[in-house]
Image (cartoon, rainbow, N blue to C red; front, top):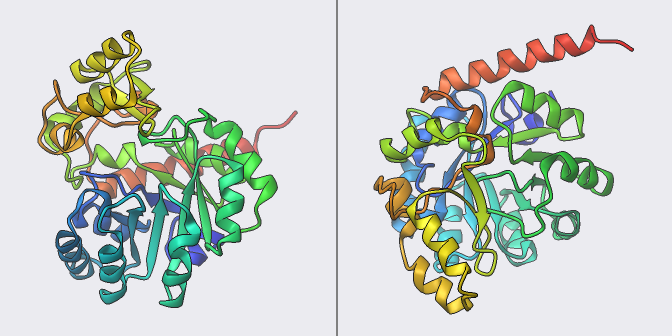
Length: 314
């Protein structure tokens, strides 16, 4: 056992990212059943929809699972109340100050993990009393850090500063990636993109097929003035770049983005006008597989790579 498997009472130190429009109860329960920690992504759910997914997840697995909550959520009080009422044991928080909700969650016996993109925020999370941090490099898909710190540099810098368990995220989709992150000091890994391209992901098939077709250089971090987000380069992305050429105001960018653009892209499958969020690592994702197969492949590759490293000497 390591610190992450112990903290969550799971078999493998692999956490599935709580991605909006991808992470319903089917994905979360499948990851938990396969020995990892599945997360329901509350960021794209109305409160009562989240409650329904938590209840369905309890029926679909007897293993630990959690809920990922972006704290920018408009119904945050209601969401936290539902998590408490439904007896959720693990919550990952992001996009906000961990001091705001960590005491409430801890008082209710909930294990709290906060997602950070820098050492400074990792230390703030530790001070706030969280049980672990996810340090996410800017290779990651979706909303991201402004500093563009890569996972390769972020993990050892955070490791040097914090004493609580550390989970690496951003650019990890394989057993070799997992081993590399753990060699850098991570206790476990969080994978998003690889699970987005799974059979159980709630994303639209169009989006899943686009992930598989995505190659090196096909994604870009943009919209830093609003909330930095890594997108696949499609028509919507090109529209954003054209607007940047005109030195837009923040309001201009907000007007172009509009509402429900991520839902349109990832959940409804509009590959032209939708927001398609995925990590740089999509370039090595070549198939849509059941979660069980993904987990088996990752663990097998991890063990094989570890064995190769043991026999490697200078």
